[in-house]
Image (cartoon, helix red, strand yellow):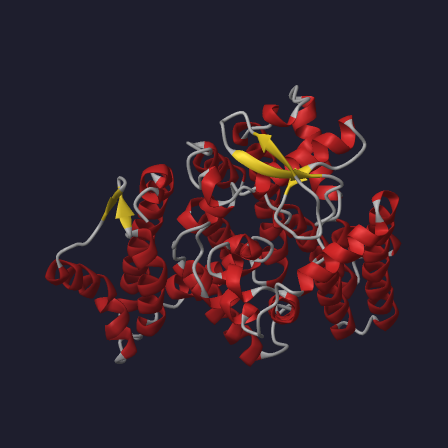
Length: 440
């Protein structure tokens, strides 16, 4: 596990300022500036575009112009303080001192912590081997590596949610006690202070707790989430409560219809441009399988419940117009969905199945071979069909009744070989993201 997380860190830190580029998403500066000025000026300064604010033009150190405002009240302060505090420790004192190279490591480290927690949670509900495969997918897949560099609130919400789910599972199995109970309530209180959508995550944990028969703790979790939002209101009132209300009202005008949840689940995994992620789709298929199986196994339904509740929350409060451009909204669920994708990949090796193996290759494999060495990769279709056919032939023979001979072991070895090739290609693609991202 430590070796896999080390590989993940190496891929994420390689050329980490070049993909995605700052021009595709400048939110990292918002959080860095707001947190830094909260420390130095005791008032959050950041760029924005809401009509509720008054602006002055600011020249950033690279020559770009930003509409600067204060107090900036778009988001709660917890994540901004983390990012801006780290920049302050590195010597930043003015807005122009904050750079991507300074603040992106915060998101990368949070992502590595999320990987560890995802492995712990996956091991508890899906088994250690499936969880390990999911960890490998998170480590080397281009979509996960790309989003693992993005400085967004979801980078902090992800480990908080995973920690809450682990604590909830410990309570369900009887391992937990007062410490776990207090931890769940505390996390539900803090998540809305990272982002307002943390209230939805608190609600998701409450649903998981209800499924475990812990009604009082579920109610406490909902109340804690509401209290966290109330603390955000107090934070706004410390500066300008009327402005906070105006900003909140303007957020509501950004909703267009009810398709935000759909786009959240189905659209691209890029930041400012198109970048597809087949492993995400494979994980969603796996969640569907968990739902169909219902309550079998050691509570894997808590994974599906969390994803479903969050997607429903995005439907209610999300803006469909940005879902297709900014995939960072997925970061909070990436570890869960990838862990379930790892479960399907493991099952395709453990019990080789022709349709299962083909789905893994079509979704994950095609994504991994989208580009090699920074160049778009389009192999000869006849060669591609020949290679894949040879690889899946043992699984096809098993489908037609070859279980009694030595074919199962041959099918397992063949499936493992194909998947290892896919994982190797994924690592190569992730290493070359800076070159690839300029082409998409």
